[in-house]
Amino acid sequence: MNAIELRDIVKQYKTTRALNGLTLEVQAGELFGLVGVNGAGKTTTLSTVMGFIRASSGTARVLGLDPWRDAPTLHAKIAWLPGDVRLPDAQTALEWLSYQASVLKLELGKVRSLAAEWDVPLDRPMRTLSKGNRQKVALLRLLASDAELLILDEPTSGLDPVAQERLMIALRERAKAGATVLFSSHNLIEVQTLCDRIAVIDAGRVVREGSVSALIGQVQTMSVWSRLEIDPSVFQDWKLERVTATHCILEGAKLLEDAVPKLLPFGIERLEFGGMGLERLLEGAHRAGLEHKNGVKT
Ligand code: ATP
Image 1 (spheres, rainbow, N blue to C red):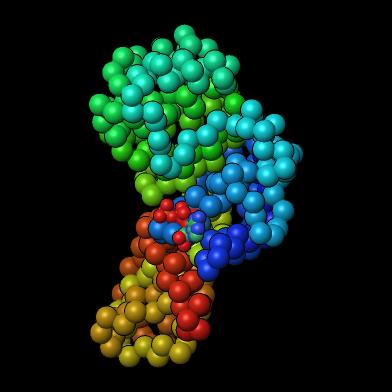
Image 2 (cartoon, helix red, strand yellow):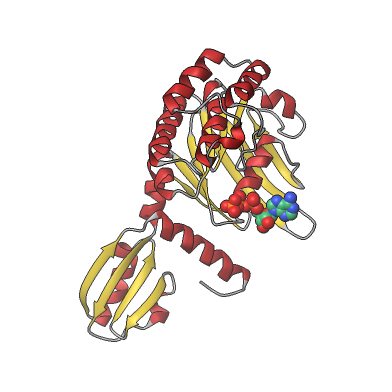
């Protein structure tokens, strides 16, 4: 069953198309990460899922509901962490969390034990808290709820490595207990280690989607040293970077199966294979998007 289904979502602001035909499915119980360069459309996607903004066109179903029309019902089932956490400066964390607990029907005891575990000062005005501690306060509200869907925009922003690790463990436990977790992140290591699946968003569309290992496995690099100069026109299915006349780097899928046989006529002297980190995958997807937009054949 899908917890989230977005189909062909377009979000047009006056002059900016923030989402441009975005399609995404997240299954119930999945830990799903959205990655992409700045301005790719991650926050707009999450805001559409939350029903904070209305799509210009396309269809969205979240937990079987229409996120825009059924927003109040949906919000009772979702725990949300915004990308720009704003908390009342004058209130203490305890005052704010107590109020949130009463509105959202959270157990205050659970909030307190989480605060102790996360080392969050509860009794100081929040304007005196560090950015990381303010982020933790907002996270406590999310973690204290037993919502079936958790949506987090850049959750580790401002957190120290210990807190990042703690959050990863907490999210994993929630997913194990059956919750669906969708989050956006610039921290590729966290995405790589945590997610069941990811979607790479670029220019308002999902340009790659799948398990991290499958995505990274799809794209690889191969350094080739040859006896003869390599004719790039033979390798149009791959990105080819020429280091010298007889040394080039090929990037793409199926290098061993399809590219190596084509290299034989050039006299292969040495081959070196490299996997591709998520950073390169992201960069490659973005570059391909720009080249497509500018009409350059990749
Ligand atoms: P970042 O990683 O920097 O947070 P993002 O992937 O979350 O970026 P979005 O915030 O979704 O990207 O923005 C997508 C595009 O939509 C950007 O070009 C942004 O400038 C534009 N945009 C977002 N909100 C608005 C708005 N309210 N009015 C006009 N344009 C907007």
